[in-house]
Length: 589
Image (cartoon, rainbow, N blue to C red; front, top):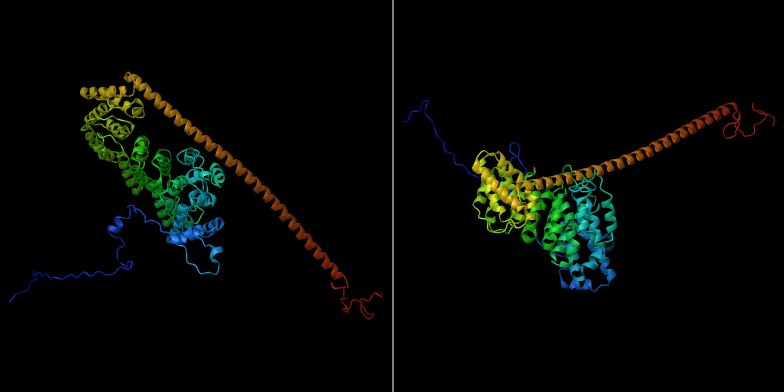
């Protein structure tokens, strides 16, 4: 018989049964609200992918389309402007439906169907007739650009990345003045007049649409963006001049406080970039994306970087020559506080660097891009480049990829790593195609190489650095190192003077705006003082009139007290208008 003592232990096996309860989305009291990452949550930061094609609701059959095309021109215009357009903008077509007719609320699906209907009409009648003669483009511009194209991305006079409004400069360069639409003059006037800094602020993310200057309803803006997407889905090159200039407006709507507007804007941007001619990339698409990267809204930056990846895949030959401008701009976005922007910037940097067609550098591009975003991996990228045998010609786009990493490597304390960078620079400089290609990168490398030549204590490393400096000097088109340094210093001085001029112009513009604001404030104060003085005089006159009326009433009361007649003319003794002889107040008349 088993005995039980104080040291006896027992193990009890309990069979656990796992029952899955249906979640109703409500956390019970006492449960933790911290939810572990799942597939759905992990994919929240990923892109939504391509949106399904918009399907028309009214003109999805040839019979209904033929019936519409058989109508007279005035009836066609009436149906488009007074029925389809209000449906697309989320409004009721009151004149066609009537007030008493029951109707359903406007949805994203219904607005997309109406946009697809108008796009089908454009395909059959032509964009000039529908967009220009019927005035559809004017209505779209009024909704998406109420303050003009110079106001998007927080730009205005003296605001944004360019003093005076960067988007206005792009618009004037690429002839984006709404294609001579009816409201082009109003748009230009509003953009030239500037934007109130209290309405469009670039200091921080402003959040709500009303604070961003978006006064039009969200449904109307979503409908306009769906219309742009529907037009792009037609695949017609004749629609491109009307749709592509509105890329800036679509990008600006990516920062909307409405999720449906943001999704429509993202899809519209993707469709516009897909439709655009590759030749529009250097003059229109990339400058607009650069402006979007200066927006205060992180979602606008993220979408702009995603579109840069799309541009790199659709037009690599047009993107590669722009690498000297693209890489510094995108690199600055890697250090953004939002992880979504950082991730998009890394992807964009890798995509644009892969457009470079130099076969010697291509295997090292992933390591170089990783070193740009993670400075501790700089030497790993330099080692990859040391293992590269340069055979092909080195152009400006290749130099824009390599020079930032080499310049950073020359600044490291380890002398062996400096030697590795000098070897890569020497090999690279011997194959530079022209001095103009390497000239922008001379100020980045020449001073650092000269420091290595003068300051490193190891003679063999100094010799390698001197050889690299001489090779780079010859690539720059100079006969000796001193002339190369003088040219670099002159270029730096010119750049500093240009920057100083730009700062002075910006300060002068700011001073003029402050002076105009001060004068306007003084005028408003003067008008206010005059109005207050006039009101004070009116109040004084009213008080005087009231006092005079009171005094007159008092005198009248006193007279009535002394008079035998009442206010109605009757005697206060007998109550008759003509007293009898027996009345005390009878006067004998």
